[in-house]
Image 1 (cartoon, protein in one colour):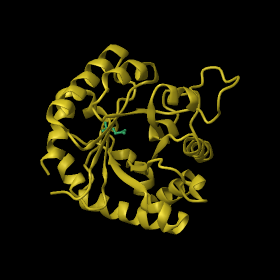
Image 2 (cartoon, rainbow, N blue to C red):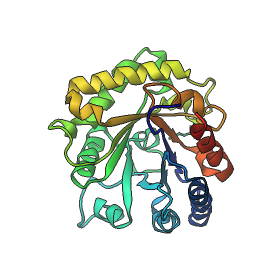
Image 3 (cartoon, helix red, strand yellow):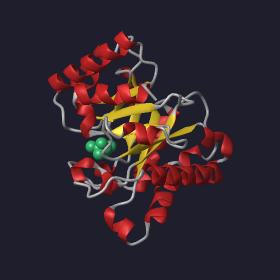
Length: 265
Ligand code: PGA
């Protein structure tokens, strides 16, 4: 029996249109209600699907997340999605600093550590729980720079936690080795024990940086090619509080398969 509730956070990226997002949300929400699933589930559809998906999550316990957010509040920012809008739509979380965002994939420009840190602070002030993604590229790994990259991203990203964490906002850090993400065609899958050790080190670092009280409220996720066949091997590790899943979470059968595997631990 696992000790604490494990989290399954789903990042649907731009894989699903609005209608398909609703279909997946309806299926997983129905399953959670029928089975009285008590684990934590978060879904992050595209911005356009946030409202229709939110209507499907009623009473299911599933929380809604955005895949990004603007660092500025309401005002003259054409095309921006503000935190006020996310709150109005019922979002509990926003994913920040995903490696695709850091690389500028599908965006006008890449997002820097500074911008991600600003968004993290804005989320905290607005009661939206940030899910900060950090991770090394294959090149970083080959050059032996993994620890340095992770520490720099964690330190910059969480700088707004300097004065501690107020209120009940839930903060997550998702460790996602970029080379392990399914769409990057990984040649190998990270060993759960290794991920557990890395996350253990990140927890210690966060406690040194932001104090043990604030750090103890942060939950750590692993992301990278997680599916129903391997999710248990990750979430059964002590230091891993849950997973952030991309591709496999966009298929209702695979998603329910993952939740079933987590529930039977
Ligand atoms: P994946 O994506 O599960 O498809 O590897 C994870 C992510 O990018 O968050």
